[in-house]
Image (cartoon, rainbow, N blue to C red; front, side, top):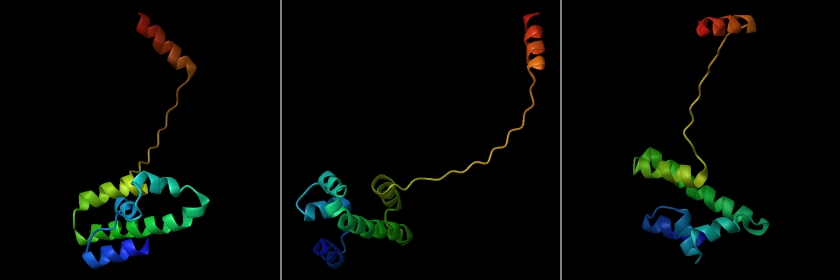
Length: 106
C-alpha cells in the first residue's frame, strides 16, 4: 500500500481510492468491502485518511476544486451544511378554530 503513495508522490499523480484499489489489484468496491472487516479496517482507514487529506488539501491549491468537492462528498461523507434557526410562536384555541370554521360555512 505504501508503494502506491510513494509512486503517486514521485509521479505527481493524485491519491485516489480507485488508484489505491488498482495498485492492490482489486476494484474500488472490493477495497471498500475489505474496510468493513476487522482484519483490514485499520489499514484501509489509514489509507483512506491519506487520500482524503490529499483531496482536502487540493481545495486550497485550486486544482479542480469542483472535482475535489465531488470526491469528498462521495467518498468521505462530506456534505454541505445548512443551518436554520426557526422560532414559531402561535396561540390557537379550539374555540377560535371552530368559530372560524363556522364562519367559512356561511
